[in-house]
Length: 472
Image 1 (cartoon, helix red, strand yellow):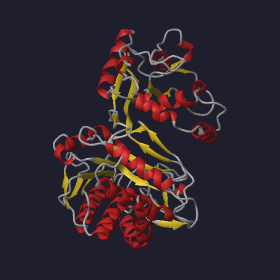
Image 2 (tube, rainbow, N blue to C red; image 1 turned 180 degrees about the vertical axis):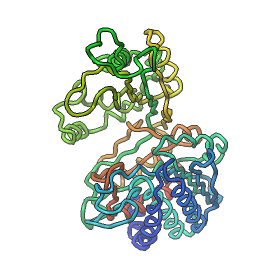
Image 3 (tube, one colour; image 1 turned 135 degrees about the horizontal axis):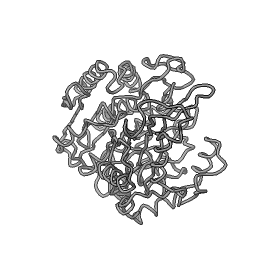
Image 4 (cartoon, rainbow, N blue to C red; image 1 turned 120 degrees about the vertical axis):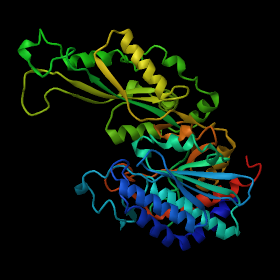
């Protein structure tokens, strides 16, 4: 029945494509780069509220910090037993160098079977799919079978610093029986056959946390007031070396994090998570090596060990280093300043604040008093059980639609986001299958045109079958 209803919705989706394109074309015109474009953020929030109301939702904007992006909330309560929540964000990554775009990042253009603009695949396009799909289902059945809520934030790409001002004040608005996180999408093979899928499906049940630090050497008297001639190196504290030595205390060559109390907080992986990881194919490893032109992966990790480390264990990365002379040729100096950007990817039960506390204690233990450590906006980890009823329903739906392609369950995604603010109130999941070349954070971000109809049909089926009882 699931496949039959999917094909039914797929057939009717063509009537809704014009509306999809119209709304997406308006939304991508707003340059909604968080903190950089307050006018674009405000105009987009107004447009989102207006569209929700035009589709029959009770909608309003909830302010966060003064002058920052509001949360746009919409609800359609039809008196159903279950409530389905959609989380999306309307801010986007900075567009970067316009010369690297083949068309304006702030105008929707179609080329070679794809729609191009900033936000098409991350995350304005997904919001439009969710909105249109619910209308398509309502038109098909005469009434929505579930209550539907939308939470739309405007700072996800910049750390969601102000979203807790909404979630902590209005937890009742997050309560639901399941949440589609940033959309559900299907990407068929190239061509006109919208039911031919050549990539596996995936269900992602959580997100890693992210504790991001800016670590900077202090000013005099710890280091000189200015760069010094390197002939005086024997007498001058070197900021670059000092920072390197400090960073070297954090992790060894086997990737073990050496901060007291850090690893003790890491929750032991659940057997249910190990079980679903064992089902994964090895294609990821080979594709990753090919994509990045690597002979081998870090520490020769493969198979279950690799996937477990990626999904269920924390990591520590130096994301950037800056010190001394960076120009052409030579300049013989002792640097007076050095800075590193460092991030920890977190898993339960680590938090960004606890990581900050342990990092400061670590430096103190090692007598490192010459650094300023600044915690930037970030996230705590979030996880829904891989056997949550909502996840089980999505797994059943994807398996029937994508057959014979496999469907893999990822306990925790390798990336981060504000999902931790929601998991106390709902079970959340990302669902769909993959496609290459979307350029989500890069120039020429796009969405394949042939994915519009299958994605609408998938979302409609999810809401339709989620409303049914005892789907296992």
